[in-house]
Image 1: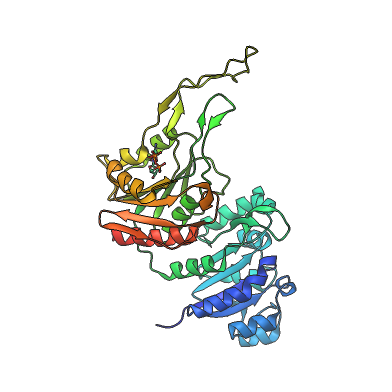
Image 2 (image 1 turned 90 degrees about the vertical axis):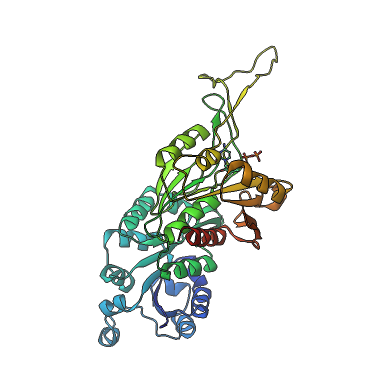
Length: 396
Ligand code: CTP
């Protein structure tokens, strides 16, 4: 098979320093690369090093007559199987969303009829800014694919969402793109995040789930071509691109939304649902008593969404549960596999010492009726890709 051709647009963010590593990795995976550098990107990486690594000339100037006589910007925009913008700054995203073409990179992006994938990289406040989020939605509507960004330490010293996806994750996303979408035509449901169970108008009971794993699963299923309905409890994460998101707060709300979404072809229950809710939620703030008497909370058990769907008349063909355990992980998970009636359980150790809750990596064991499959430690994005592939296999 001919090598797939990627037009790599490198824009001027600090993450441009990762471009050489990205080029090396894409080349090792058999991709042919033609690089395009913006003026700002040249402040971070040199055209010479990029050309040497990509084994291709670097295109940079819209008005370079030599470029236009050898290969015009229209031709450049058509030669690739995928245009990858990495890093994609807030600026290039804004230009793409609004059709601005004032340099070679943005002109190619406007002239192309090839699929485009972006790997955003910017400060967390720029990412969170309503205009960037608005642009992101416009780009989603235009069919632009997204990889990342991740949560992490930024070059500017701040912490949050906006770090460019890891090179391995970008390469995985590119590889996924070239697979022919085995989940095309399938509707998948994913629950994610914690739930908040109110005590009074300002207090609630919850857990430490960040929602990172569930969000990555929704994105990976989407990348394999699925129509995804994503039901999430409160998190700090941006809603995943190109999937229908339902934001809920309590277990009961999650339960009700999930029921309404049935029938679906497959469902993944990655949410860390609170097992109990408070009986008789106060409609006013509970005050401290001068007598020192402590409030007495009574609990009710929440509906078990996974168990309900597993036994539902409209049960999806494949039901995948998670097991969050702090001890005897495999024993507890295999007990859950039979008690809940699901097809697979993805078991993980959520004890604080494992670093999984709130972290970027995960170590899981996938249990089904046939046995247990232990996966090595990998990023939550990679767990999601592998799980999505396994799901595609089961729904084929
Ligand atoms: N789950 C659910 N609804 C609930 C509780 C759990 O859908 N009310 C789902 C979770 O999304 C997960 C699986 O059930 O897929 C197991 O969740 P977990 O918290 O590990 O276990 P629990 O069933 O809550 O049991 P325990 O707290 O005793 O470990």
